[in-house]
Length: 365
Image 1 (cartoon, rainbow, N blue to C red):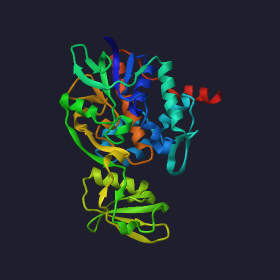
Image 2 (image 1 turned 60 degrees about the horizontal axis):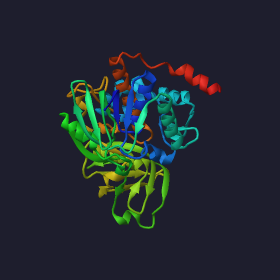
Image 3 (image 1 turned 90 degrees about the horizontal axis):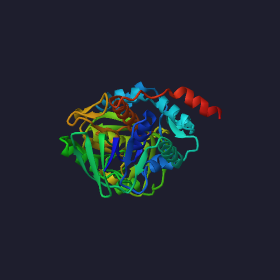
Image 4 (image 1 turned 45 degrees about the vertical axis):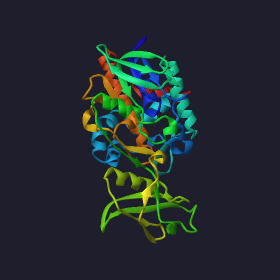
């Protein structure tokens, strides 16, 4: 049976960043991934262009997450800000560019290049990925944890669960991390689809399928009261309505458990349309999962469980979610690095090296 400092369960955005961070600190670490390749959902982000983050201050980003999520994420986002993330990619040889809406992409606008950077870094830092390895059990031991897969067992001093939510299950996010959390004494908040389109009365769609409006404002109305507003793209599909303005509205409604709302769409030409959604599209189609491991049971200062010493969580396995536009990837990356930084301290390792000199050196090449 192998032994290591850190076992990272999940080879998505959070798990890959955690593995890279562990390698930077010189930790012995193993990433365990149930699919035959890591980063399956990462490859889909931003229509395969990979919208990594949003080029705004950490203060503004935390406001956009809205409490309680923003308050919980504050130590993580301040510890690894949007600008620091961009420098981290530059230090790895992949420059980023800022597009409309302050959205940040790799300069190649290829998600595959982002994944390649992660896997190359893991290789260079001697961090292994065990793919096609479905975790069957996570057990607490005297020395730490034992993780059992269908292929092998491994023991580690610490475990970081980064298995994601339950949307896009074909990418490997099936809710198993939340089930292990329950067995370790955690409670899990109910799942709801976030960042997803709505099904509407067919009359709304009639002779308009395929129509895209580049910028609208959407007011979320509960009765006559305006709850919130979003802005962005509005798309009319065969199945209903979508686009960033609509998907952001769906997240707000789900996070606040709002029912029976009306969406007032304000177009650039001054016209207004009110739409009463019938229901959201299925959670398997949602960009994010709302719900997950309860935030009150996680120490936001280091992402460690308050129920089980040495057990950490990062990314969407937690009850965290943000607007469309790179917020959710930023949360995954930041929480992963915060967790690994704490584990590194406990293993007697130093902190992360400055990104400034490395990024500048790479840019000169």
